[in-house]
Length: 378
Image (cartoon, rainbow, N blue to C red; front, side, top):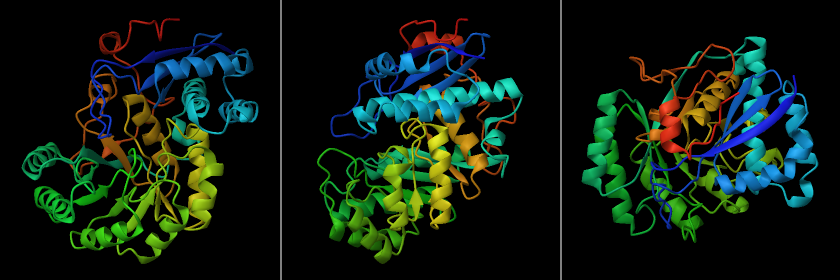
């Protein structure tokens, strides 16, 4: 089975807020779907956390290396693309695009062999996983109402992030965290994301250490992106001194970038994003390396339904990965897929045990949120 074509479709019209300094608008394209078509009319899906224009430009570079290749060897083919584009720089649009292709090839392999992708990644350690509702921070009263509604919907775990946190004063930070804890209840998992990858992030080591002490008073599960991504030495110091777990890694790509952080124990929790890091092949390798260094993998997923499906399969195949991120209120998750993503009575999501990723796209929603390109037509 050979790769015949790769098609793309940028999602627009319902792009949720990102919390960034330069805030997203509904028609901004930051998520691009990828469909790999084969000469036997099997189609695999992937998702890329990158502009469609950049994905298409990357495909112009890598298509000569890709078309005609085996569609049943995702790890080898993805590594071929990485190895032959190193001169363009590791990371960025090329690596992000390979991420979507790699995931789509795993989807094809699963469909062809009749196995869920998680089993092909090494075996299923679990058949369900807890999603944490990922919510942007807001003025305490409004945020409290949103969290209470999510609690009523069945969520048992939450992460609040970005917004005014770390950008106003310490009192505002604590008021937000206090309101969140009161809204979700004492027994719920609550994590806090400072958003240190935002433009011109000013939170330094001393701010992060003081803030970690405050978060400990509210039983926060982890403190995410407390520092700028490149502050390796400060992350190591912060993890050593912090009373709460420290996490990061969503902006890094490929295992080579993660290695020094994991070996230095810069984080308690590592958060690669499957839609950027190099796909499921790279995320699995990072998971193994994390395990060897005593670090837990919880994937970052500001996502689409295809990206979430990939995260679910990854979570089934990594022993310690018992949580996945769920961007609440996004049409690109809630409307785009035909998969049943309903929480069970324990606040868990079932991991599909069907061939491939276990997700298919709703045709009407796809037409509504893309430019009408024939992503899936064989």
